[in-house]
Image (cartoon, one colour):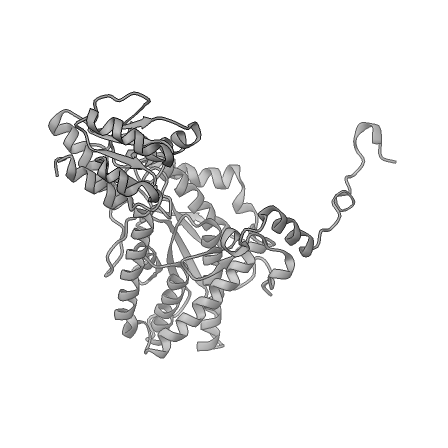
Length: 462
């Protein structure tokens, strides 16, 4: 008999936590939403056109009919990944990383890589297993599912091309460069860590961690931590049974197969290159716009900057190998802005000061002051928050909408610096402009355009 007093009685988790139906979960969620739109609040619409639900259950997925550790190794290989240098890429590999680093989404990466691989087979350029190089970004679960989907797609393509073939996909994963920055190197390190983990869980054969503003030994240690401390390599299919990963694997594979068929119908990969280039250009533009408008956060770059960081003489960023396609760097516009401020500070001996003048209702003044600290901090300005007017290059009023007119009439005549307002007080805008307010900054502002505008107005060195 178990010794209950000693606490050795086995736990019966099923008895302690009885099953809850999906209907009960949904009822609880809708009660918490209190009438808010479920789809808008909780459903994430990705760049790939996939709607990701707030949770997944067994009924939401169709499990892959593939045993763990068995060909085509969609559910992991019994052999753990190898640590490789980023430059260790076979000359005849399919470079899906070129697409990623040039602005493609996961579905496009998979479809175009598949089309390229099929064309190689059709041209007799491949006789055995096929090497695919995939760049791994920060979309953690999608990157896991992307590698699993790549193996599934290649197996389907090979079977359709020649049922007698047994060529497997050999996946070489490299941490991405497009999402890294010369600023906030430790966030780069965190990104590289999660990317390497995605690659390991996704079943990559080799993983290369590229150091960006951090030392090579830290990149090497990511491998060691994943292998020796997390023991990810000891589990054949660490993502198996995760309903989200299983669902995303299927959805990415289905969407990529449809796009692959469109490429094939257009004559194959080489003939589709002009269309691919146009799609990549549109993807780069959309991604940069999402960063400049701050709809997408790049920590340390367009939000939550380290206000003390200076990188003018301390950066070295290798360009991504993107083959014939232009490279995308999400941080590039903010880096240019911040480096301009640093150059001006060096040339003039003065870093432009943005004074956040905090007055009035506590809730509003603090919320707007915090917003502007992040906003103007991303431009490399010196940020000073105070309730008192003091010398500055730019004054930002941080208060409530109702208090702005009186505050503007007090402050504008008392300073030679331009005065702007934090917020978008639509009913007071004309009155504030008449009082001498020169602009407004709020969540709908395009940060790149706004920061460049004030750099120009303050006559910062180019």
